[in-house]
Length: 164
Image 1 (cartoon, one colour):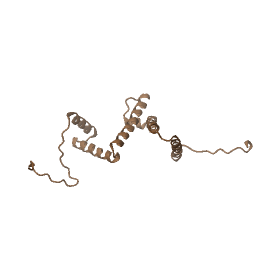
Image 2 (cartoon, rainbow, N blue to C red):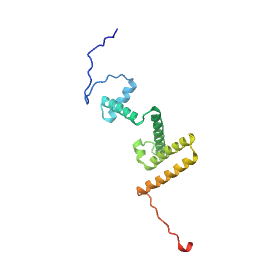
Image 3 (tube, rainbow, N blue to C red):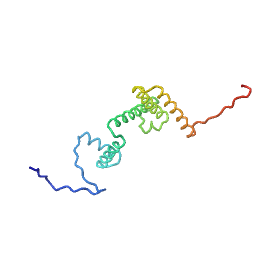
Image 4 (cartoon, rainbow, N blue to C red):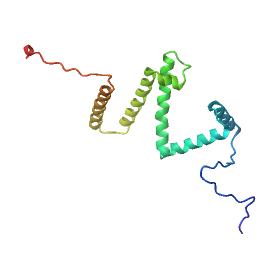
């Protein structure tokens, strides 16, 4: 026996049309959503839609839970080290935007992520010779980036004819 549906039959929305979405959340989630909506100058509905869109975007960028978890772990490492560096420099109150604008804090955070990546490489049993070759190529690329950005120069020192 087929169960009879209640209410008016739903019609498919047209593209671009705003439609209602029934959603039940905990009181805590509603409070968080309301606070973020107010902070960002959006309505509760706009904030919820924005956050849903971001979650779908994250799925496109990070195609599996494993990749998403790994990326979040590295981003967390970056954020923790940046905040720690700001605090060490006497800026406990700095927001993420503020410490990221500080070259020293950002550098320390970046190096922490690089160090954690190196630890991952070592932990997963890579061939040390291959890794050493790759690290040498990274050094060369780093120097090239410095040169291209005008942050370094190369000077050639000619040998003294008398020194030969």
